[in-house]
Image (cartoon, rainbow over all chains, first blue to last red):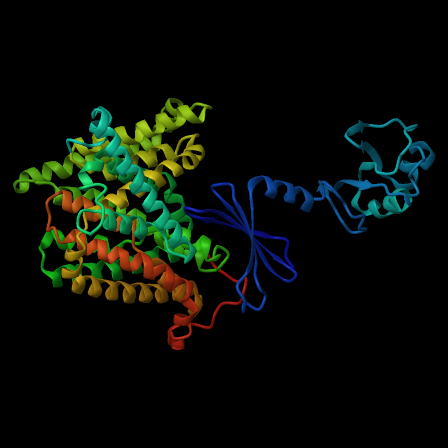
Length: 160
Length: 413
């Protein structure tokens, strides 16, 4: 499956973005009116596509969900953003996370995982560049920077 | 024209009341009829027109508005806003981005359908100028119906949809040029000299407007540019009507003036907001335009042009199906795509009616009115119904005409 998204102008209607996914081709049509249609085609091409229509607001919220802004599963292979070989990602802490209730210094994050915690998102607060004494808590989303290959180690060490 | 909308405002007491009741009732009937049609998948244009026919002077029952002239400026505004919106949406870049295949498919469509129109016009023998108008009436699809149909039939993700909309854009380009060339023919030019002057004046106006669209986007954007939707609406409608009026005064039609006004605004920074704000206005005044067209139609006259209408509908349907097959072949798509293209572009609507109203206003053969009304009524209703059942045609298209359908997900455009 290719990650490419094809883009096409639909004159008088809007723009269409098409991606190949497991289970069919997904097309998103953004109308000039702000309306969004999501088409999921039948891979065999036998049945008409399934279509859902969203308002501008609904689409933005769903887009944020898809992008992982609300909930990020701790997959070991997921990559959020890699800039010039540098990974920027965030990891949520659950009740079973080994890092919950321990400070950054205590966890020896940098030495043990070669990754750096640059911020902690706690509820509506953002603790930017936390002190090593900062204690991580259940529900925290820990924003980290490092090399992509070190992410798995960090997830094991801190998030579980 | 004495009791146009200006008269409406100026009229005293009881007269104003009566006219307002008539106008309100007419719009309400048109709206409710179109709403009923919507449930069975019919587009609004033929039903607005049907409402005009039913409440008009030629059918039994109450006559709300005696003649289209009573709606005067309101219907002209409908025509102006329809073409302003077309100019606003239209982009040459879309056309060029489609590449050679799109131009080929569009050209094939135009050649087939315009020739069909010329053949019908010649066959009817109503006259040379009438033939030229019939070519346009028969040749140009309704972009409003096509666009709405694709959304409602949920075909926006289909492989042929880009090509199909591209063909409609090619038709729109043609319409703009055609309208510009038609005006001297429709105008009452006396002799060659006057005709040449008229064409020259028109061309100077066109060049000026195209130059304004090309290089004037900054000043025009600043002129219109306001963060306030209310002020923007007032200003852009003013620009559209002003340019349409100037165009009409220099002997180019108000229709082409409105189209060019749309093109000028399309290049400015406020284009996207205008695209959104113009829709309700266009819908309202276009409805009045279609309604007024219906008012002018005598069902008795409809029966007298039934033969020509049936001939034109048949030729158009065949022409569009052939054009659909050619387009699908050019794009390497199969029978489903060919049937979808052919049966979608067969819809006729606003442009045919605009051309007919321009022609009748210019004093051409009066039969053009009922002919176009009947032709549009049939194709605007039968077209969408056929498009929703296009698979029936797809399975009947000879398989040797078309290659095997492209794999899902594979598309060139």
